[in-house]
Image 1 (cartoon, rainbow, N blue to C red):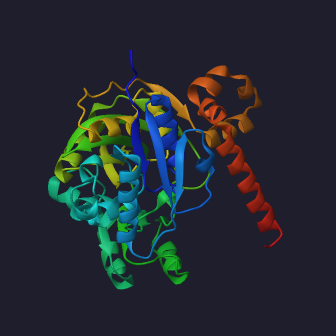
Image 2 (image 1 turned 90 degrees about the vertical axis):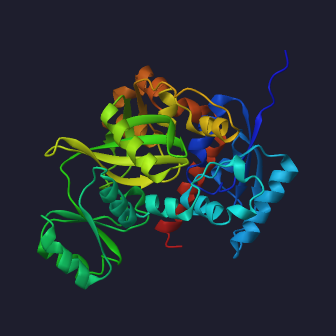
Amino acid sequence: MQRNKPLKVLIPDGESFYLQKVLTCFAASGQVQLYVLSGKAYTAMRFSRHTHRFIYFPKPADDREWIGKVNDLCRTYKIDVILPMFEDRIRTLIALGDRLDLRDSVLIPGSLIQFDTANDKGLLAGHMEAHGIPSPKSKVAQNKSQLLQLLPGFRLPILLKPPLGTGGGDGIIPVEDRESLHQAIERELVTFPIVVQEFIDGFDTGCNVLCKDGVILAYTVQRGFLYDDKPFSPQMGLVLIDEKEVLEIATRLMQSLRWTGVANIDLIYDRKRRQYQVLEINPRFWSTVEGSLFAGVNFPWLYCQAATGKTFPIPLCREATFINLKGLVSCIKKDKRKLFNRELLWKQSTLKYALRDPVPMIYHFIWRTRNILLARLGK
């Protein structure tokens, strides 16, 4: 019996941090041949055993040249699916979609309006208010004067968030009182425009989705239990759960955006109102996509199925615990006995995947050690 030919998948933004996470998921499927286009000549995943071909192409000044390179690679290698991972190149593919030869083989929003509404916290807040999606009270201040004018409409404490970015919590400023706000302004910590958002007392929850024209094709719901010491940092450990209320909110939100592609929706459970509220959307793959794999939902592989016109029932998400390598190290540091916990090491962490593909891990360790030494030497 002849085996099906592997799908040829082009990842056009291989310099992204998320490449390692996505490659782990593809390796688990065993049915993909991966071609990676990168704006960096050397990355850890260049040396991955799961990368069939790594193509270095310096980022050009004109994005049309980059699209041309993507088209060339698709023709040369007979690519089946294009899978972008990060906001920057997802937006480029939307903006220049008319120049893309394989436009029907990539799952991305149909317009920049859809993408920018999801990606910009200020635009998203207005969209959710208009569509009745539960979310914290949020307003955009364009300058210091507007910020001070908006302040009486909020009960302190509040959060100040840049409209774009904040990956890993960067740029988020908690404001406890007026004095701390003025100090942040005087120290030029606040950059404008800025989103003023009410502070919600609760716990974080995430909903990951794959959609087509606003219909959810696959999803997982996760709740963090292990975090870095840095405030607002991403989860290092999480549990995959079944939470119908979260799915209902995500369904309404994705329908209102007519979303196509993947998205990671950040929510918080408001203890006072006793309901989930949407904080923001990451309109891309996310750092814990391997956690969904542990729960039986392989988002990169399902993306390829949907992009090639395959239909499938919504995968059943089983309950699971997931800890990334950084979280695993943190757990062992706190309790050395966990070094001998087989359940933790082999069934709940990504250690087994790292050991199956060790060269990128070694490369990253050497690169990180070198940078630390250079920093200490002042070079």
